Amino acid sequence: MTPQQWTYAVFGIVIVLALIFDLGLLSKKGQVMSIKKALLQTCFWVTLSLGFFAFIWYEDGSRTAVEYLSAYLMEWSLSVDNIFVFILIFGFFKIRETNYARVLLIGILMAIIFRAIFITVGVALISQFSWILYIFGAILVYTGIKMFVVDQEEEFKPEENFAYRFMQKYMRISHADPHGKFTIKHGNKVYFTTLSVVVVMLAVTDLIFALDSIPAVFAISKEPLVVYTSNIFAVLGLRSLFFLLRGAVDKFDYLQQGIAIVLIFIGLKMLAEIFHFKLPVWISLVVIVVCLAGSVLYSIYHQKKIPAQPEESTVES
Image (cartoon, rainbow, N blue to C red; front, side, top):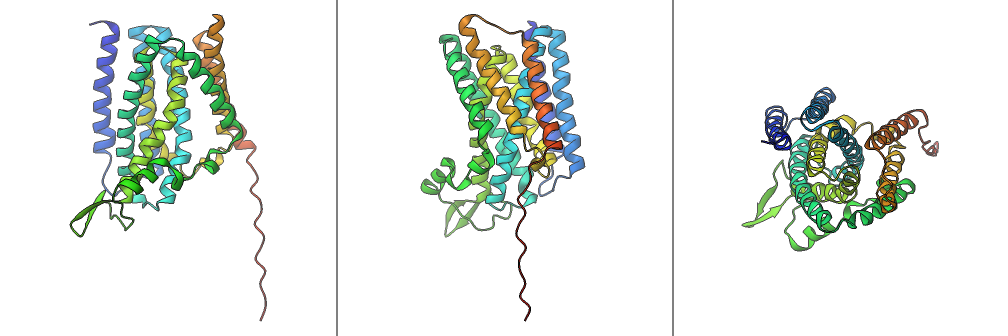
């Protein structure tokens, strides 16, 4: 076997074992994940991802390893941005906390399948039409500028989501308390519950985010191995990261701007290749780390001020 084939084989074995351990043995139906457990599982996925980085360095060389790490950090940061939208979806459908873990698990596994298909199509397109990378670059610059100036949390409206409207129009949906079920029966007819709707919306939302994140990874590396592995590792750690950050997402007011700057940089890097100008891959890694760390630190020390609510006047009788 070639070094790359060994890397694919090890990756597949690691992912299967990790899924059994993390998503199977450590996940109980109806259990609310504590902050401590979420922290441990997040550390588990990050450590596994960094361990795979070391393995790639040993098996495939330093360049591929640095590309993988840069792509993983890019995907991981965009996954954090996903959490803002996931919280809005759970809140809109009033999903009970005891159902969060199961819904996220199924939604994320669906997202992995969709991403694998999307990446395969992307690899095929790029191999046939290399100029499509310049279109990806222009899209990333536009997306980055839009993300920098528009608050995605305020812009996203679950009730206007096309997946939700499609399911409402063409499928039987019950808004009754699902009691942890994905389908229920009414009058000998099967209805999908809000849990099913949320699962589909999570997967579709992640796929929409992938339209930005996967082209960004292609800008870092055109190696399918790097694109697949960085994406899957980042998405698999998303569930535990959700439980770890859901109470603190409002503390990172400027993280979105940090991610936007990274997208603009990556997009410009892709467009610069038109003029045969290429930056070393380690520069991308440095820019990603500096922008993300800088935006988090800036958020901590410069939190946006929340307008004071007027006090309700009381009338004495």
